[in-house]
Amino acid sequence: MTANAANASLMRHRPFAFYWLARISTTVALQMQAVAVGWQLYELTHNPLDLGLVGLTQFIAAALLVLIAGHLADRYDRRLIVRSCQFLAGFAVAMLAVGTVYGWLSRDAILAIVFVIGAARAFEATTLQTLLPAIVPVPMLARATAASSTATQLAVIAGPAIGGLLYAVSPILVYALCCLLYISAALLVSLMRIKRVPPAREPVSFAVLFAGVNYIRNNPIVLGALTLDLFAVILGGATALLPVFARDIFNAGPMGLGFLRAAPGAGALLVAAVMTHWPPRRAVGRIMFGAVIVFGVATIVFASSQSFVLSMIALGVLGAADMVSVVIRMTLVQLETPDAMRGRVSAVNSLFVQASNQFGDFRAGLMAAWIGTIPTVLIGGIGTLLVVLAGRKLFTELYRVETFAQKHN
Image 1: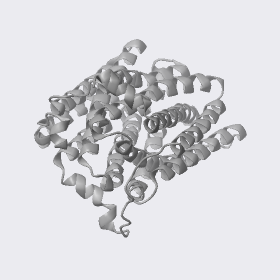
Image 2 (image 1 turned 30 degrees about the vertical axis):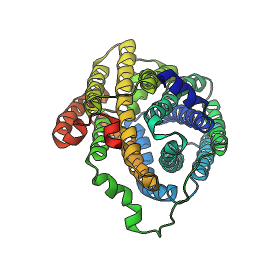
Image 3 (image 1 turned 120 degrees about the vertical axis):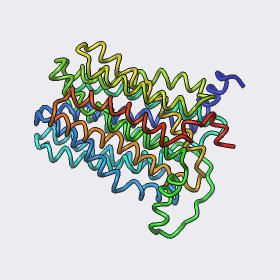
């Protein structure tokens, strides 16, 4: 079977098509909402620390709930969990629209609503990850992971651009469209038909809840992939500070913010499209380490740039490198995990992702309030390169992984 034929059959598979469209819908909504909340909050307080608090609020929600989410995903109908979370997120973002209309949105009100969205996201992201292996056969999983990442990156490009454009007209339009997209995603998930062995209903205990943690702790390759990604993004992430770059450094307005937020998605989309057809077949571990190095270098270039165009290019390269790491990490996690454990292992994976993105946002906001925006991003890029050096020593098993087939067999 050629790569083109494999991809065509994948996209003609109805459950995967619904899954793909649902991911686009929720991610577009999430990205549009992030642009609107970031700009609205920064206009309200003019404090970069508050931008970091948005990330911290979502991280707290994930940290409190994600292990419970994994347990529920292994016990109950996963589609029902995802749909419920999407409806809840739609309701929460509708409250942002109502608060904007009536003028009662304060910093604390925004953070409270963001917490609800973060809680819904903790359950949805964890459970959604577990659906993919039930939709496609194992030999196609790497391509399906890349294809689903393509959906995410299409949304990461379109969402901020649309969000910035609509925000220039009215933030209410942004929030209303986000609500509609969340509801549409829930309907798409309800149309999915998957086969799954009924789960064993284990009694709730700490051992059951933390089974995913123990499983990953005893798997050095998966642990290494998650840890490398975690610390690289915590240190190198600059997303939370993009409103500062757009407003105070480049004077680009909300549309400029949308373009800056879309740039990493553009680079990631290109790489995801390539990896959908040609996933890594050799030197998988070394490719992942190399991708993190490129991520760190691109972060340094972005911090040093005085040109809006060069900054866009640096963010595009950053997103491309991150996508290589994501596809490899997600494929390794799915291939290594039996279905009965996927919810709890995906919960830990989601916690790592949430921690890297959202706690990274808090780290960036806190440091920016202390030492300034540009030094914060520059130090983060250098820190990412140091993480790679440490990871090469600590995670030699990951570095030596040659093929996905090697791990699956």
